[in-house]
Length: 161
Image 1 (spheres, helix red, strand yellow):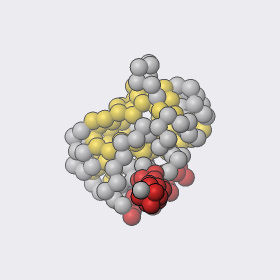
Image 2: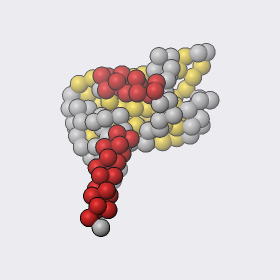
Image 3: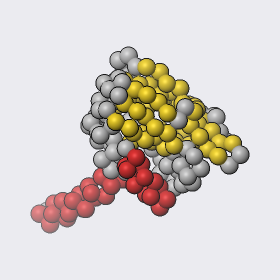
């Protein structure tokens, strides 16, 4: 019996780090409720300014419209996302450094899907939303990290004043 408990403990000890690694791209907003360098998940029950963001591709170029959003520090925003394109797209909100690092991980695992408080992946013609509170001033990035999409122009900036 004791060897069985030790064996089970060993299996759990080995499995926990692996599941933590699968939880998301890192500390970038994947603590669900934890504050990050660019803010924290919003409270859907509280008022939020609605900002509509359209994802699309045309003539070999991919884009977010708008690709620049200004926010007041402390403000809660509801990003109403709509994929008007013919391909899957996603919006990942983070620091530029975190998104560039995560883009490298996406190259290795292009089918990684995001449905975290700071990220949403949408199939063509679908909608979704991200509710976020920007608690710190600065410039932050939002990008589609599906391989090739950011490079084709699918990136934007959030300026928090």
